[in-house]
Image (cartoon, rainbow, N blue to C red; front, side, top):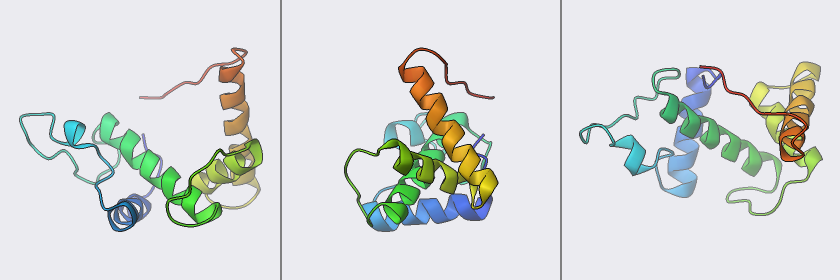
Amino acid sequence: MTNMSDATLNNAIEYTLTTYCKNPIADRDRYAMFGIDSDLRITGYDMIADFYYCAAHIRQNIDALLGGPCFTGVLDDSQMARVIAAYNGTGPAAARYGQEGVDAIDGAICRSGSLYWYE
């Protein structure tokens, strides 16, 4: 689901813990099942945790590409394309992935397309 290596996932988690002083998974979801910690730091194990891990990596990319820790502001399409591309790596394929991501989001906003999730 998260489409990232374990090293990238753990780097994003450590970045969130260090920079934002919190676990990337909200406590209400982290301890939802009988108070058991669901933060196993393994991709593909839990869909909800995977969404949080994705968000942590995207947040890390935003900070890295757009002005440092705790960046706040609105991203324009070119900035959003860079952030999405960085999620996929570097090079022409990543740049294409970034632009396709922006196009998909714009299409969903204009209701001319839709976003989809794989399970």
